[in-house]
Image (cartoon, rainbow, N blue to C red; front, top):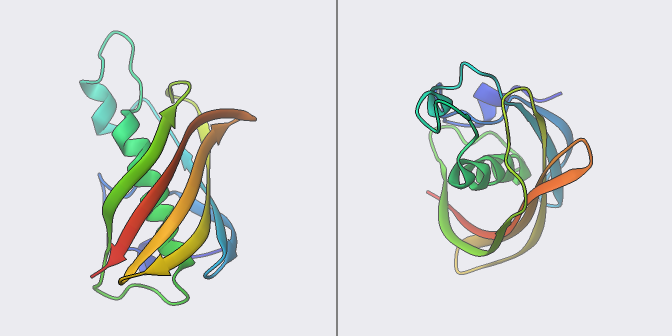
Length: 135
């Protein structure tokens, strides 16, 4: 649907959005991330029971929020400026197909407020309100 590398400045190994499923610029984005055993983050977190770090679930939501922008970022970036009300309810494991859903809740002082949810097969893994700033 959307060319992810053309829209976001992130690259491997830190590009954490695989594809965009639905997009209403300025309103809502639904994206996807497939967690694989080969993720570099999982090599040491934790070797005996790998799981995606919670802070990277938040980063996935922030990156998905970049698709709220109507145009590709072209050298600019979306920076995570704040995290509010983050809740981690279950781990993201290798083999999980994560659904990243982000809604714009408003803008002020050059920042955008987003409400995001990471889920897998209907299970909510993480919810958070994020403040992001385009630089």
